[in-house]
Length: 405
Ligand code: 9MR
Image 1 (cartoon, rainbow, N blue to C red):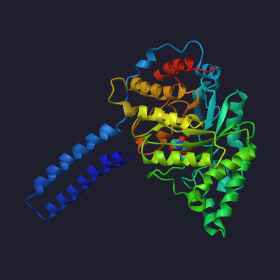
Image 2 (image 1 turned 90 degrees about the horizontal axis):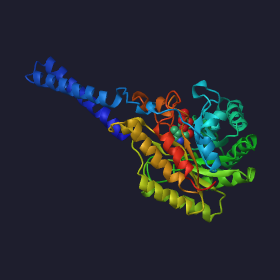
Image 3 (image 1 turned 60 degrees about the vertical axis):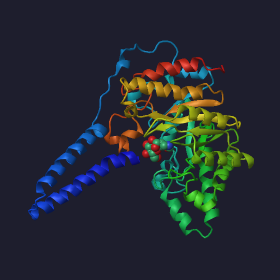
Image 4 (image 1 turned 180 degrees about the vertical axis):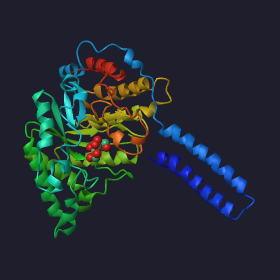
């Protein structure tokens, strides 16, 4: 992120400063007028070049369109035979753009937003639920025999977007903020899990407990009010509501080594030592500013599964522009996707691999600056027309060779 900000703002500031200098020089009829004017021109040209490099829409060759349509078994069929879930985040159950990708290619779905706490509430009013949108997605999936991952019960980031703003107000004005938060958290986990009982069998109980700013737990309303105990408590409540549900903690890392990762493993160790009912770790795996180091990822996954925890890749995507130095960016993207997926698929305790979207026709990157200004993002397994991209065939092979029928 910092890189993109520096790349665009610093040159703009230089142009602006030189422009001010030029205006002052013109007014004062200074002898530096020509120098200032030349500087403005040169800097403006550099800015335009950078703009074109970073933001100009690109069109990479789609050599993969030469392949025939997939023959034989589909991803979902092979995954099911291997007790594995190949999943996609979905926003709408019956968008015609996606044809029948669910259930023919994906045997698991995660509602991209519909089961977030804020989205389940009428006008963000705590306790007033409207399950219509979530039910439509979930009933569609269940009717097709597709697993649903619930996402997410407790997430302390983005007040008003992922959790209701009212929570901040209620906690700020409570006489006993800790018991107020405990009760609200219990009520929500109970309401959501009870409503979806039997239909959602895997939940992300706590999402992104780590800070985005440094190697520590996110200083959100839950941590500030209850300490790290909030994480343990959320899992305990969820287990009480339905002991048959698989409970995951879900996190995103830029690097799979370093202080932040150690803080995360300390958290897992602490949860285990407190006998907290946690069953798995989900790693989101968005490749946003860079791709991930695969050796470090393998070690990370091994460290998780050696503790007796399940593992899933829960939100995979990789922007095509990260591969634009390659001769065939879509092929390079496939290489990365396949090698990343291999680490999960070859590990028997890795039970699922979910893409954060069905096809390149809809990805969160297309809505978020600066990525929305840098098309194409094309970060998924199927292209805009639901045509399988090159990683499709290779992930299919990986699944075929997975042990565990
Ligand atoms: O893709 C989701 C986007 O549509 C929402 O606006 C956003 C905030 O609710 O969440 C996005 O999904 C995020 C997921 O819930 C958690 N990990 C990061 C995902 C991408 O931002």
